[in-house]
Image 1: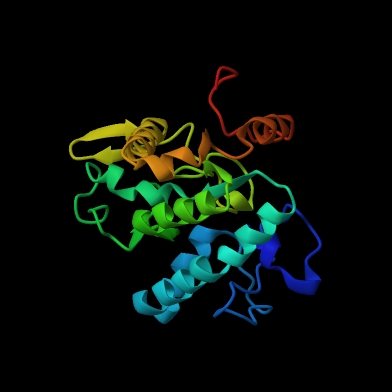
Image 2: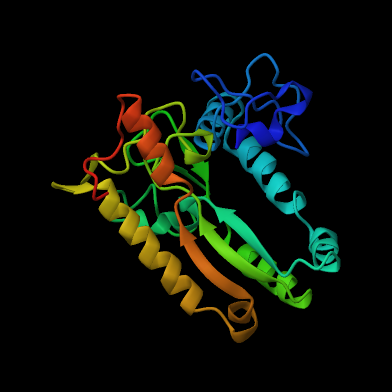
Length: 240
């Protein structure tokens, strides 16, 4: 979320009015006060267009490799904490979308477009081998991990953590093209969820032993209610 990287000028836990607060993505990206970023997908797209793919990967991989390291897990465990939540982008399982676009979402793709906001949001995929190593690190410190698939393509809630903010969330209502057919984004989300579960089930005993649970979507419920009261609902029906 942009607020986590807003520096001393950050004021809002949830950014307001379509204006972001992100001024950095340590350790390599700093000093964006004049053009603060709004969400992960928007930041990735901007960097890709202005600095190129190689620089995007360098920035994101450096961030993911240094933001939480082994000594942090050791410190967490020493405080008596026994469980941590690890938020993940849907792009961790971007290859589940290959039936939408074989080339864009091929296994091993490093940067992928949002399937709905293709020209406005991009994401750096997560190396699942790296993720498995993180689980082994946690296991060494006797920590349990909740793997949290934080958001879905097209935005599954309305906030900077939805990947595409300030664009309106479309996960619950919109469809995308799959060959000659169309498919609801919510069904695409099911492809991702199945790939997520399948990957977890394929892990070795050590990695599997540290997983406390899996969760899907961050805060879609109360934001749906808030947006409905404000006259801009992003779900189709109460049942959703």
